[in-house]
Amino acid sequence: MTTLILGRTLAFDADPFAVPPGDAATFEHRGAVVVERGRIVAVGSADALRAAHPQADRIDHGEALILPGFVDAHVHYPQTAIIASWGKRLIDWLETYTFPEEARFGDPAYAAGIAARYLDLALAHGTTSVCSFCTIHPESVEAFFAAASARNMAVWAGKTCMDRNAPANLRDTPRSAYDDSRALLERWHGRRRASYVVTPRFSPTSTPDQLDALGALWSEHPDCLMQTHLNEQTDEIAWVRSLYPQARDYLDTYEAHGLLGERGLYGHAIHLTARERDRLAEIGAAAIHCPTSNTFIGSGLFDMGLAARMRVGLATDTGGGSNFSMLRTMAAAYEIAQLRGTALHPAQLLWLATEGSARALHAGDIGRLAPGGAADLVVLDLASTPAIAQRVACAEDVWEAVFPTIMMGDDRAVAQTYVAGQAMLPRG
Ligand code: GUN
Ligand code: ZN
Image (cartoon, rainbow, N blue to C red; front, side):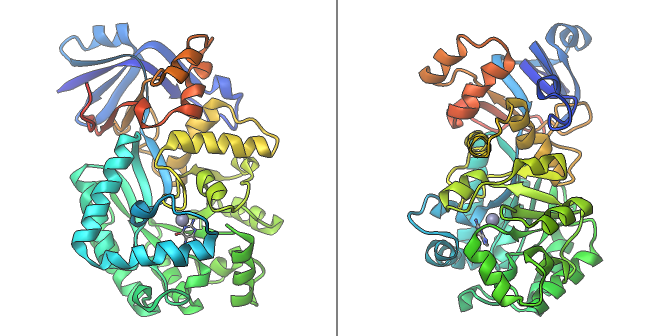
């Protein structure tokens, strides 16, 4: 069966951090995406594709903009219920809000309920793929992969390992972290659209022995990603220095234990030393920018200049981040770059939220509106509220038409979300 999804289309042909951003994409005012068996087989003008596929089913989104589904490269799905918790900075925030909530995920029914709630919220906000931390409980990983599989979503996730500086009911050991992670990896990695991610929470909550154990697991499964946190807050960095006095810097606490690699995802990466920046770029690792989290928890201003040197993904960091929306996340990335003296182009923001994050995850199959990829799509109404509509009325090109939705849009702008060609939202 062939389906023609009609609307405006915007397809990137190049990295807008490497070419003039306005020239990085092809826009069709009357465009179409042809979908067969969950995959994109063609993208182009509606007239040409209607003629080429006369028998195809048609879904017409009118003037709405069809993009690749958003890819959120760093979330904590177990923090869904405590998003927007008031008044704390990182370490206090973890102890006050996060750890008590994460302690509930040993209960498979609770974990299943939040996994379903989280993924449905992601879809409602146009996000089709995420890379999530779970909790120390294997049940939390099972629940997440099962809920994603039921929705046919491509997801990345792993058991969050901690063997110190966390409450007793949230601690594992070097041995159990290795054994549980390995069992989950063997069960889920590569099953349908699931990928397992080796997941030490961050250096302060792992002993060197646990980091060694997870470094060994990663080296035994080099096709897996590894995710953690790096240089988020200055207090945290000082704590890392006291816990690892022999390390050259925060990144070295990972590097010394086999946890620095091309498939490594380093969340936040704000307060980097010159050595850390150079080393991440040399290795080809990914920095994941979490802008609403970085302002909400008061962490600092990410340097988007890194995007010219290394993979950079974009992420909500739910629930340290204050929103499920990648639109709001792009807006925050724009604001942070402005505070550092750079105006990110709408093409750069949209690319980071789709192909940029997909590249960080080494996922060639998602994040692009191109033949061969999965038909994971978001359809944006570019006039979803009166405030946005009146601004769009005088837009002169696609970038001016989409920017008000980036800055002011939310889930009301999401007309539809497709996963592998299936519409996921109960909308007309
Ligand atoms: N660093 C270690 N754990 C976390 C977390 O859950 N959220 C954020 N924002 N930073 C962290
Ligand atoms: Zn995080």
